[in-house]
Image 1 (cartoon, rainbow, N blue to C red):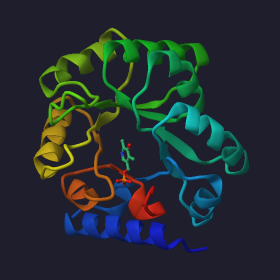
Image 2 (tube, rainbow, N blue to C red; image 1 turned 90 degrees about the horizontal axis):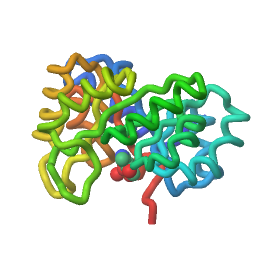
Image 3 (cartoon, helix red, strand yellow; image 1 turned 90 degrees about the vertical axis):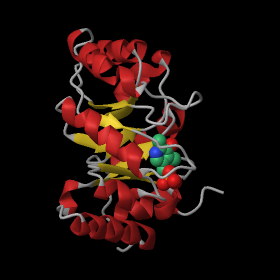
Length: 219
Ligand SMILES: *Cc1c(COP(=O)(O)O)cnc(C)c1O
């Protein structure tokens, strides 16, 4: 079965990868299903998509256990901010967390992964635009935080994530994220949304998080 929105985004990601001399398979599409309900999500699953992103633990908990019962090979990524009192639920529910951004959260996730004997794929969120209202570690503190995640909290970090400031050219932010990842030996970059995933792929994104371009506007 074909889903038009999914097809359009997959084609766009593949074209951007080829234009950058990269293999389309090097980029994972995370279909961001926040605010959408199972009747809108199921056609995307039936069209073959298996990786989904949600930004709230409670919303994911209400929607995904039933869908995963039916499609056990689905991979669920938390892409929104996490409170430490939700760490247990987040570790139970998700396969990946993109928003590790402070010691308290790193500690809580580490503790829960050991307790539940479950290993999640982890990304550290970097506030590349140094926006006061936005989550993420300051770019100047990223190296030290990454070291702390490993040495103090026993976490293996797979890569970095950013959300560039809305009104700016995202490319310098993608480049900064890639530079921090490279000097820390991290291979994965979670960057690019509906409006800028092609530029993100050109800058080396391994994970793009696309919602509205795939599902339609969130109203
Ligand atoms: C909502 C969201 C997205 C997807 O945004 P679209 O513009 O709808 O593609 C990506 N990343 C994060 C962190 C989000 O919260």
